[in-house]
Structure formats: structure tokens, C-alpha cells
Image (cartoon, rainbow, N blue to C red; front, side):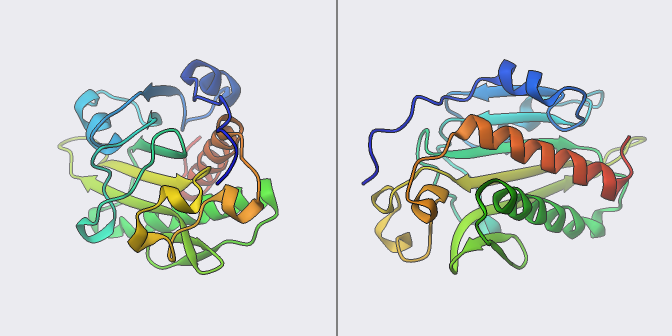
Length: 207
């Protein structure tokens, strides 16, 4: 077990201030609990919503993974968030968004912690062959507007082995487990959002 977790609750205003003029993170909402952040972002979005809104949750009661699997999201231990996007791509090209997000997560982990993540296609990020993060992109056609995409992202940050269900303990890992010490979630959230923002604008032509 790791020592008592750090008091590093996510603070939306501070995250937003640190991101400056970024597209991803132009508005950040932190919820204490929700069914899933992707559901939450759909509830607040409409035809006029600008892309780049990010919704974090300290706890998800029904986080979604690939193929309908449940994403285990221990309260206050990881980064569980979704991003509202309006990429100028067609619906069949949505795997490009999954690849972009997985590569950005992997790059941010490598930059911040000198770990060496690998990507297990289509949507998992692994360390030492165990899942540390996942991506789920949902795309919806919009009339007379760029398609709406929700990129749901989960990163295991400060869990110990015991925080995972028994059946996942041999297949899941957190950054803290890989490093042997707790991670500042707020600081890593900023680094990850910056990486997502920069690479999204590079790949999908956002200015």
C-alpha cells in the first residue's frame, strides 16, 4: 500500500489558468462524481458549444471502456476526463482520434516520468505489459456543423495494487506503482492537457 494519498484534488480554475490560450482546456469542469464524464459532457453540450471543453470527475460510477467494458475508476486516484472536440474529419476516420489520444498520453507519461509506455492497439497505453490508460472516442454526426466527438480518457495515477479488482490486478498498473511513489495529479493533468492540445492542433489543423 502507498502512504495516505496526497491532498491533490483537481482544481478546475487552476488547471484552466495554467493552460492559457489552449484549445483543449479552454473550459474545465471538475465534478465530484458522475456516471461517466462522456455522459456529463454530452449533457452540457449543444450545437453552439465550442470544442476544447474538458470535464473531469473525481469518481465515475459507470466509466466506459472499449467493447462495452466497464472502466474501473477508483475515487481520487486517477485522471478520468472527457474532451469535447469538433474535428474536421468524417465518421469513418474516428480511429485517427483514438490513435492521437493514445500517442499523446504515452508521450506525456514518457516526458514527465521517464517511463517507457507502449500502445496496445487500438486504444490502450501500457507499462510493462499492464494497462495504465485507455481511450474511448465517440463520434456523432451534426447537421450543418463539424461532427461532434467526445474523447474519453482514463489514466491510472495513484492506485496501489489493492485498489484494482482482483481480476485486474495482474493486468493493470498505475503510474505510482511503476514509479514507487505518489504522483501530483494536478501537475500531470496540466502536462497531459498541454500535450493533447498541441498534438491535436498539429494533426487536425487547429489554430
